[in-house]
Length: 223
Image (cartoon, rainbow, N blue to C red; front, side, top):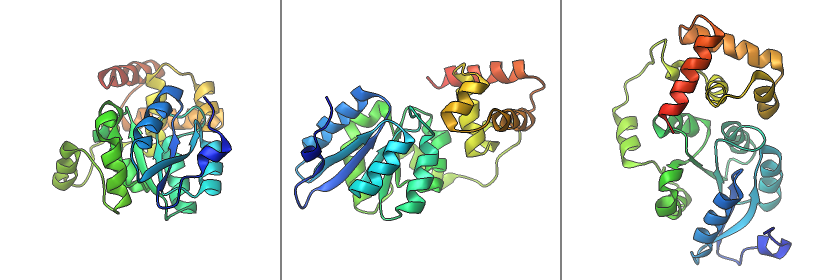
């Protein structure tokens, strides 16, 4: 059900939450959980990059919950743009992608927290409250990983990929072709092909077939 205009105006004193996710059921679930909290209210919903940027500018939310996989554009790019244009807004990434690989990237992009969708039902409200307090929200395991992290990544590791290369690699693993990747990420086909070549070099893969096989295996291991 579409939200009515009056539903987008939370009562005074409530923190305003914008939900950005390409699955209507996920948005509905978050809306229900947030609606049970007297100090929180949903001020808008979006499924893709463009609507999210427009709503964030119009509604001036206190927190934006962002999925990394969107119907249009990239969640990680959305975090970067929102952090640059609306630095006072707190950003919480909620995604099914591997926290150990994406959480630090999300924080570097400007997010204040990362929560796995498998844990979202139990923890998303706590995560929202925590980032509202100005704190960082991560799982206990990821917090320890960050604290114990040693500098540097090894070539041949997926962690050596840039944020954009990782997005392309992830989409390859989902069986999405170059043209569709270009369309989804708002890139030219030539740019995507360039990213594919860089990914192959960093992962020490010799052919497009090896890249596709490795990306598919990597994707399956994380689902």
